Image (cartoon, rainbow, N blue to C red; front, side, top):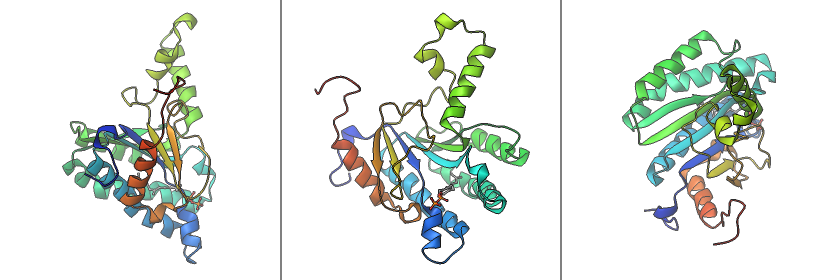
Length: 238
Ligand code: FPP
């Protein structure tokens, strides 16, 4: 196994806020989009590292509900780049036993073509069980809670039946376990609307590394840090 990592205590679900692509590019005098392009390698380092460790769920924040506010050409680039990565790499993910899922709003802002690509990718990989890669696209944590409440109302669930289980079962993917570990790169100490409901008890690891420089070694470091923490879920120490 990997040095310093206890194979018995691998996080079941890791979330990644892939931040710092723009700054990576700007520091090199390149267009911000070059940072996103380099971010693809880092994404696959995270995927390969997770497979190596035996992580069952990996969720990556690819495009937030707030990212539409960026300049139109960067938005266009990011939307097309997400599609491009998906189409270019889904067969490889499928071959690796990865099930692809999506979390986010399928609203009018998401082009029909992308929705079609998402549905094709879901169908192509739905039988895979080695790991689930959830791509948070047009995702916002508050939007997810709003959508869950709307779904509860649409299902005519009476107020007294609304509890945490009812809300959880109306989130984008009711099967997805809460993340054990959330990693954010680039020295920003924020959650930025990522998995708000789900990360109530997640261990958070922040690193100065910019996303394009992220490798599986950084992932292993985060898991070592996770394994050094004492998770009490509101209780007392064991
Ligand atoms: C944050 O960097 C990164 C993003 C907004 C996009 C990340 C997306 C990818 C790496 C592609 C993922 C694709 C799939 C299919 C999962 P930033 O631009 O906010 O960087 P900055 O904070 O330095 O400006």
